Length: 188
Image (cartoon, rainbow, N blue to C red; front, side, top):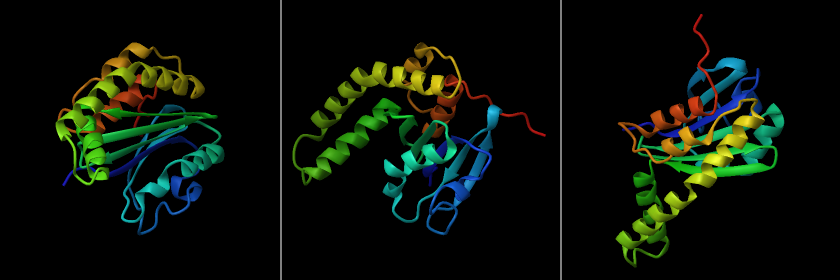
């Protein structure tokens, strides 16, 4: 079994369970936390109940409560990662490991079509769309970093968005955090 759940990135002194409804309970326990400089942290939340409750309005509410940009990376079995970022009214989303993401998106489309149609064509169309979308996602990530107080370049992010997981997709997300300017806090 791989890594599952959301990695929620926020800057706040208050623990995530105190800021976010449902987090920390049996349905959405906190499994781990990583500390970063400037008060940033990444919190791993598993979902045993409605994982889709942690999108859209939940993200907006969390950003309002913290007064800072937030990121949420949804990871499934260490294979697929969907990233959502919010800073002010600037919402963006993207995928890590475009090959795995294209397969996931094609599977979703194929299932909505009641398993009719050409799965390979769906996957190829998703892969083309992800490739075309990479520059937009990289620029949005740069804006997110600027709102977080970091000046970063889009090129490393653009490159990272084209990489294949090796071996786990969540490692790409932690590399993305580095590209966004977040630096691990020293232990001690």
